[in-house]
Amino acid sequence: MLKKQICVGIALALLGAGNTAALAGGDSTTGPFGFKPISGSAYGAENDAAAPWLIPEGFEQYLVSGETRDMWGGDGQNIYADGQDDWHDMNTVNENGPHAGRFLFRTHETREHPEGGALSMVDLKTGQHILLAQKADNPETEDYDGYTALDGIRWTPWGTLLFAEETTGGRLFEVVFEYNKDGVPTEATIYDRPEVGRLAHEGIEVDNEGNVYVVDEFRGQRDGLGGGIYKFVPATYGDLSSGELYVLKVDSSDEEFIGQGEWAGPIDPQDPRSSGLAVQAARYNRPEDLQIIGNTLYAAITEGTYTGGSQNYDGRVLAVDLDSLVVSDFVKPGVNVAVESSGTTGFDNPDNLAKTPDGKLVIIEDNVPSDIWIAQPSRKDAGKAAWAELFASLTDDGAEGTGIYFGQDPDTLFVNVQHSKHDDGDGTWAIRKVSKGNGK
Image 1 (tube, helix red, strand yellow):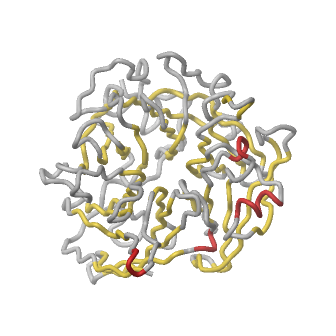
Image 2 (spheres, one colour):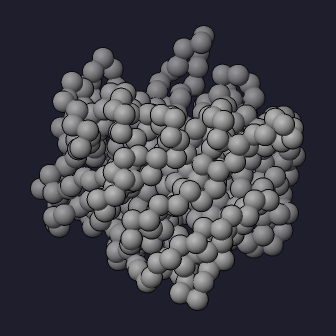
């Protein structure tokens, strides 16, 4: 357990409007985040470090917080003074409680650094930056539990913050805040939650009943172990110190693991890969993020299945119906979205997911160029995308986009740029809709 004073001397704020809206319409130009798709990926596009994204007409982009500057005219936040990039990974805000939407939380995926991994917080009202948590190994005391490769992050319905490590036996942590009389966080206590599973954690999702969904970023089908989608059921709502861990099992005739599913278990949270294999868990290749929309759990699977050591396709997005537990391909290259090949725009290595205010699914690629797609669940079957259109593309060919997320402002999508080719290129960006209507 780590206790850290974060002393934030700030006052009242709310970021933007509520995050509710009517269901999306029939194409990309309708709905509160409607847009006209861009013409193609950023192949050969000139990179402007001050505006690195190709975006639709009617939208603007700006840097919220980088390593040398920020939107308030300040110096941003540079966690590692030795030149190490901060590796901004994923984002969330305080979605409920005092001043909902005011504080942006970020994980930093730094690995094997002497100062350890980091968790940061930005006050979106004042521009104040806070290093919320950082922990390094200490060989002198044989304390080797420093943070490394921090990745997934999620605000919970009960008002805490979850974040996790992407390492082989990665941990999931919960941050519990205390607030002053003005409702501003003044202290954070961090707890390890081993019952949720020791996994190569990336995405984290929580449903209305308090169940926590996590993934394991192993190549399960290719290597025969791991790569599962897991559900942690707490013994008591809002208490992650005890409960049972289950893994998704699918009645599939092949290693695509599509079909009728079930939650198998409970399994051993200290060895979820082997205990999951024992109950015939579905083994996907690099599951990386999760997003619930309605009663469907979407999962980004970054790599496709393998045959003879080669991928059959470059990743997909799955849909799990949380009522029936039927698992389907929601977006898959060559099926309902184009295949990327030799500079031709297409779908490749989906990584992170987000929900638009009107119920569409945002998908970002771990690829060069890193594209952002938006897909509409079919009204008849949320397990299938009615369409998937190209929303944005990153011109920085040394970087990837990550951490897509809507806070409380339905017009603003947060997205991080990670390992940029520019010395000051890493940071958190906003892509904001400035014209209403159909995005034209």
